[in-house]
Length: 436
Ligand code: LLP
Image (cartoon, rainbow, N blue to C red; front, side, top):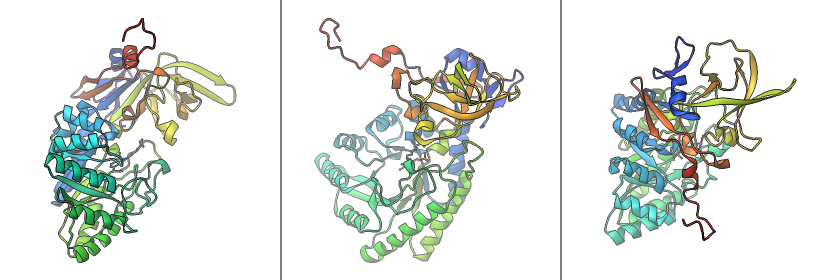
């Protein structure tokens, strides 16, 4: 997986650093990121556009993993940044990310969030609904500003993915419906609002997608509509944002394409449509999240207890679980793992990896063949870089693990471990004596 290797002690190494040492130094559970892999993924997307000569922006969907260090890394790689909440925007601003490259998403942005975005003069707001369109116009009037926007449309494409994370189909809470006249109404309103500068359209058809068909069909539907709008309203889209959703390989069952292939096929289709309808080539923007950070992340756990039910199952428990990775419980997501302190030991048994939360559904991996493990051994679960830390929670009052970045053979702590004190820091006592 990624740049992980096995060293001569039989230990798993990430970016040249022994994971056994990392676990000793930082404790477990621990999120470990291979920075070189994130850079490689970012460059893969950027190069694909550069090679084509098409004007583009690759915006990192920071919901996948938003921290100051990650935002700084995105800036370093010349990416733009997609944020979906005041909190992600705040993180971006705290990391001094260039505001003009921030894009703001979300289906229910509050007045305060929009004011924050306008005050910081971010690059663009992806408008999701009529309420938001009016809110932006009115805030802009009050503070005497204008804002660049994209309209998010739902082209009615269902990407081949898990139900929970399909967002491009018509029956969705996101965006303006392209087919029933809603998007057209939004277009006319955006054109009429003098504080709004309409750059173009946005769509996002889903996540963990392995083919380009969904993107291509979405582009076709959007261009059919753009052609109508060109003829009727003389509107041309300067920007077409096709969202994120590029898949990664969690297990052998996953067969994602290379960034270059996703991008070149998308560009080819857009060029075809542009020619067909005699339009100007728009800038193409994309928003990869998972595919930039997913396989760069590995979680290290310490193995603790074991329960064997003869002829049925062996449960091996680790010191984390759905509090640091909710994806198996929420989406039946599958992962691969090794015993990091004896990667090369012979596979001896099939076990199921249990989390430590008080909930039967807190299982990380079912039925994985592994070498015989003992308490104290280290389990490394691969491809946890996207929506792992980002969706971590304090269920059972379990503190969230720290995050370590590895680059050039060196480890750097970029998020410290949560403490028990952190956990109660927002709590207020109802007893007068204890004064907080
Ligand atoms: N753009 C928009 C508008 C999105 O809604 C999303 C993800 C992305 C970009 C980035 O998608 P990606 O490239 O990461 O697939 N928590 C789920 C994934 C939810 C994705 C939500 N939207 C999971 O853990 O699989």
